[in-house]
Image (tube, rainbow, N blue to C red; front, side, top):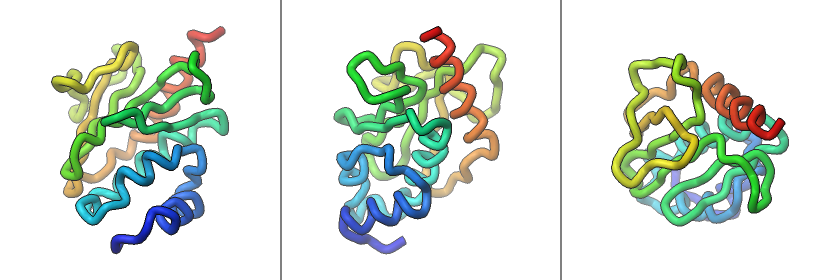
Length: 148
């Protein structure tokens, strides 16, 4: 995808991936030319993380996007995506211990969040794992069950 301004990118992302639940600061973060190679993976992953529910919301907080159930100060975080640079991003999920995959790692230094248990790092060369949508759904349901 060629570099396009933030407004067109937000429109594209909303229409293509249904990520209108993603805050505009996150879109602005990946709008620069440096993100050209990783932008599509970022948008696809955000779409998968937000597709779990109309109540899901993603918001950029300094160097990470937190994905929450709802959009209030007491919202539960079911996933987070660290976007410290334009070469890779790391996604953390609130997954049960029995959820296993070769791409899962422990939290990287400076990339951990309370309640998130499994982490995956993705570069522009990586394929997004087929199970990614399933992980997003499980993580959402795990955190949602804690509210009941």
